[in-house]
Image (cartoon, rainbow, N blue to C red):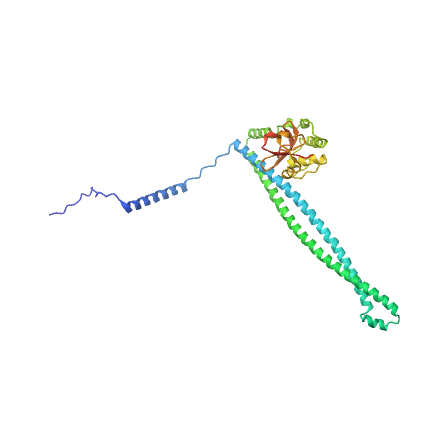
Length: 359
């Protein structure tokens, strides 16, 4: 009998996989799909970055200007500390020179005493008395030598003290020199941060069209106190009467600065940053203020916003990074930012942080 053959066009029926075999097959299928997907993704070009809108550019420029102002106040503080460290190093250097001069004088005196003793000889005093033809004269000389010895001991003690004090002064000078180096490094860091942020802001503004840049400037003017009309010095008059003559003098100085440019780190007379303006205004009134916003806020009596009076210092942002001089009626004179001169502005255009009454 011939064996039964399966026709070539008919394939045997495969039974479905179950159990572990089925799980293994599913795992291999998923791995293959993931591999294929990764290969496809690797070959695909990354999506093109979306071009920021004019509104996004304006918002980023505002942030950069704000960050630059924060860095400016840190720079001002570091500069003030560096100046103090420089004065301290100079004073210690001068003190060391004075003490060294006194030490050299003492050493010369000691040398003179040693020379005088050598010339008197080294015989025992009793022998010298016995051999002397004039005992009374010898006793007088012996008393002088005793006094000279006391003087010599005093000179030696003085030299020891001078050497010790000079060493102490030099140690202090070394510490102050290290502090000065750290302050200068801090200055460089903040200066770099300011320049970087301002350069980034300029680059972003350059991506806008002329109309968009003009719109940004109008927007910034609205927030910081208006355009050219607000640069008129007549607008800087106090809306309410100043509480005292010093406050009136500070306002008069600030009014005279309206229209002068903002320059970071400047304290006048031709340019100002925000805290430089308030410091110069109150200095003109005979009142010394510290250099930075975050130290000026503690330079007087804190007052609530509801009790503001002309001449008060008004501060903005949570980091106390901006300050203006209040003139009443919700208005202040301030140095806003690079590209915007000293001007009058409403105090409600920025986040209010506090106020201080200086005098």
